[in-house]
Image (cartoon, rainbow, N blue to C red; front, side, top):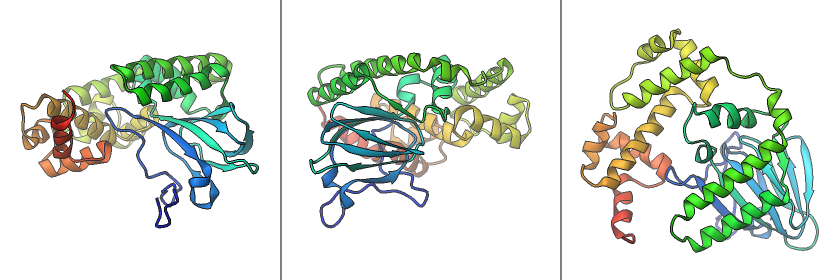
Length: 299
């Protein structure tokens, strides 16, 4: 919100959205947006790494997506791919209301290097031909069902939400399999090298891991190792390692058997402050705030 009470999309100098979408525990966010509530009467140009399903519920909306403009009526929807700039404005006198589902691809594929990530999602995320995809009834209905699930939040709703999203993305990929198969598959040697790096990072996350050691495992120079990992995963080695360490720390926090400082050192952080800063970047609260929420929440 800005000082006048209107909503805004906070972006950096490159138009990347700054507001988080969900958390490391549940990288999923469902919004009901009225475009008239945004400063300037619409959603300004921005981008994010998450996938975005956007459906018009009421009115007509003009989507400026990558190199194209789409006019969507009630019931129409699009999937906006990862890192695709987009802006949305009302088109007509009637207020435009949207249902938006924003999800990080990791919620679907599980972990970097998995068969689903490397063989299916990665080709899709990197496809310029599929930067924007019109949704069919099956996918728009899945998004509506997701919104209902979140509103009720019955037991294990998160798992049902993942099931709905996986089914919707499966239908979408199946429909566009010919475009996806045009991409060059990764060589077996590259996949073996990636798996070796991931295994080392996951098994030894609590240790100081030097770049020289990672390069030796990959059989590459330091610079080539960094470029290779970024090309294969979309993340730097340090980004992946920090995220994995935070995920392990999160599990230990929930167990409640170690102090924050003990967890920080166990997970490879040099001190509790560094762990807290990394935790905040992904969970949007400190470890102690997270613990407080867990203790005050329902049993």
